[in-house]
Amino acid sequence: MKEIRTQEEDFTYRKVKTGKLNTVVTYETVDGKTFSDKPTAIRHEFQLRYNSIEKIEIDIPEFGWQWFKAKDEEELSMLKQSLHDPYDTEHGMDKIKVGEWFSVYHEDGGDYRSVDYFYILQDLKEAFENALEKLK
Image (cartoon, rainbow, N blue to C red; front, side, top):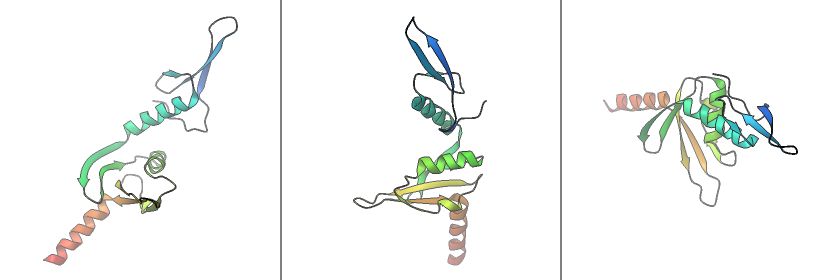
């Protein structure tokens, strides 16, 4: 499969003559589908990439319900951008590395800025194991 393009890169496009005066530009995505506008083609390729990312659903209250695992830096960057609104405050996003299971818990700020808490599953496991050791 070809690499998924980013917004900055150009798509393959074709000019199709539909008559003497009309020429239509179409954008072709990596899966061969054609679109009449570039933003729709970009969204389609983003969705293809997002659907290929490894994810599981484990509902852990206050820690999130969907967990992701990026296999490369490009996927990790894409996930961070799609899961975190730059207007919101974030905690822990810089700690996430490729190959780690992580989740985002979004705390609505109401009239104020919201907060996105990024949790790494291995860190939670270690914290719970340490807490259980102390209870013995």
